[in-house]
Image 1 (cartoon, rainbow, N blue to C red):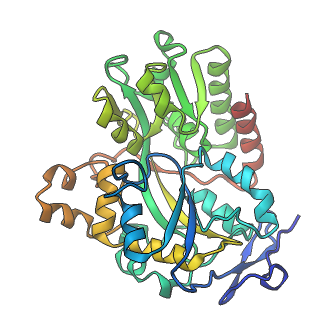
Image 2: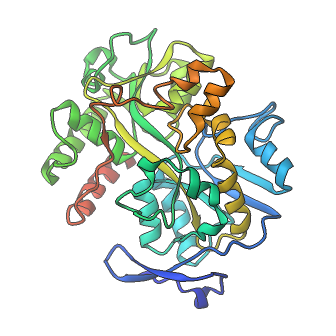
Length: 380
């Protein structure tokens, strides 16, 4: 079914429109989110461990949210309600189809999912005049991705690495994705519910390039993982849940994200991000403004605020993901913080990521069958 989000039909403000294309290749109307006044309240949906927290929590004194609120007078409703791209999209899609965002003004979505929102007419294009810091300070390496060449509807929130998150005291010898299939770790490992994170890593461990893999190789790898789940070798398929399982010792290792590992390590030094012998998967999570966003003006103000290098540096020092903002390293150098300025997770070197790949795109002809097979695995 073609999805057309029409400005007039929805009665939503916009300062222009462009054409996108839906999952069936048919044109959809794409709104441009109206800047409007930067005031009132806005709501942002994201995952856990994704912003610095002040005293007493995410909106406590000394944290980015609280400081933004104090500077601008805008109230932020910061929701850590995204466990995985797929589950959140499925939950919100009925509202988006009706031109509503569930009250959300910013949604964090990984590159491929951000494109899906936009192709379906669920994400609005930006009024770039409202976000000058984004235009000026976005890292050159992130400015022209294939899925959004002009960054017309996405602004990276953070980039990161998918690899191994390991309890070194429980599994000191895990260095390869293949180690997760070692019988001595039966029931003590988990994988991510993100198709484009987990399956490429397993394929890489088998010597398969995910960017040239055939449909059969994707399906065979999914079957391998399903067999490991059925046998009890793999304990669970998770979103962000592994960040609770590792500290408790319920699992010894997980396919997980670099920033989560760094955040967990602050409380438990035995938890670490381990670069797999085969390499990692590199990705970005992006800020998008959904259709029906009640306060895009305030959303733009927040986007611009976090693209100031000083503010971005404060976030990166907590989340330990790869910052998308140019000038952050210089902030750390001025502060004399060599540990942050030279951190491989915030500023990955070519040597550190030499065997890594970006998240692969699926052939549109193969994607439905592969996603259906993955959906069966995730749903159990």
